[in-house]
Length: 111
Length: 120
Image (cartoon, rainbow over all chains, first blue to last red; front, side, top):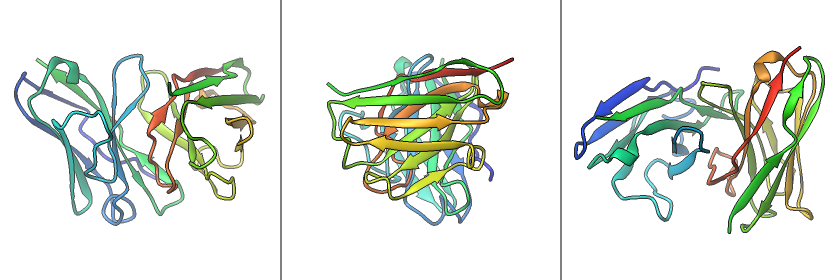
């Protein structure tokens, strides 16, 4: 079962906004609102930043927002800051043989 | 203070077994699902398995089904992963993560991971 598709890398300047896409199928992203986004800094454990497509856990900056259209989910980061430089992974429930899928990850560089 | 502490990693030969543990404190354990997620060196995250709060519902990824067994002991707030017939491509940092009520991939709290190296 294929992983969700994310761009391998993206970059932006401080203060800008960027959107990371996550494309799946109607067996996962397109048919369920169980889409999650994680941020991972080098050498650290992942951190949940968006759950159920659009919701932010307590303590996560409101500069992070999520949405979905069809089979593609997206993470928007506004007002980029140096600390946002990290790897970002999307995840979704799947009705296929592998219960949960991750995207390949997007390395965000703040330049 | 939320703590998820994995242990049991190490170097093991192909075909051998290893058992990972994840001790949870500071958050509710017995009422929530628990996940194992792994990350091969320099690679992305890969979901491995989930177990419901009562251990009645369990799911595995295609890559480990039939070789790995997830279990939990709610009296000890501890999650386990029994890994048999290990292969070199099982080499990874293994993270435990606390989920929610739905077995859908929600991983709120994460441990720091334990490294498993499968090599002859």
